[in-house]
Image (cartoon, rainbow, N blue to C red; front, side, top):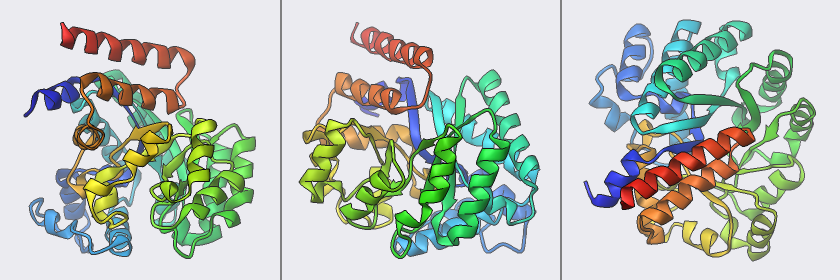
Length: 340
């Protein structure tokens, strides 16, 4: 481990783009697969490495949904959620906005109230026992269409758990135009939720514009294609609209073909507020610490620069003012002590 890697490992962090099911460790996935033997997911943690090797984005979605299928009752939901927080605690993640897809569970027959109760029970235990503050982004699985959008909006707006802060849109972008989801985002925003759709990961800049205009996005998930449109980059920078960048994910799903050419460099050079995230960490063989290391290398950052990235995530988060101030102060104190 390099000196900078050691600094990153101990750095207090926030994460803004990380998926609930996609954060399941091989140990937990294997345990769930053993509980549900009709699933094609391997029960051997070592075999999961091959299972999680993706040919392209479409294959990633196929594999991802097979893991989603392992979450079949409220006990599965609670176990997964708490164990995700445990992995975050090991990385010194203090706060995370976890992208949760209720529709994937309710269509499996888990009652919506039981689902919400399970994640909230895990959230409260994680904060008390692990020191990790979890918040939720309920997202629409775009491939499931407007039925999923209606169900997600209903659960978000009617049940609105205490930890829920935002409303998102994930899944494939190709063939899933953003504007069709406008009524559902309008409803969520009216209910007090923030808009954080995925956009421009596997499609061009127009998808990002659609997310900004039609879905009133306050942050953009991925935004990988943004540098293809200088006007868009300028707009993002001027309005301080953050991008949730996930370098290793982009490489694994073939959204970028060469990590050395990742557009994070152009994003930062244009003055865009960039945050670094892990997306679906065990599936991509990564974690947030490793993603900070990748970003540090690509951006040629020292410890102070990495701490700046950590504070970007705090700024872009939906924490309250006091929470942001406290985490910024912790990052500054840690960095000062490291220098000392």
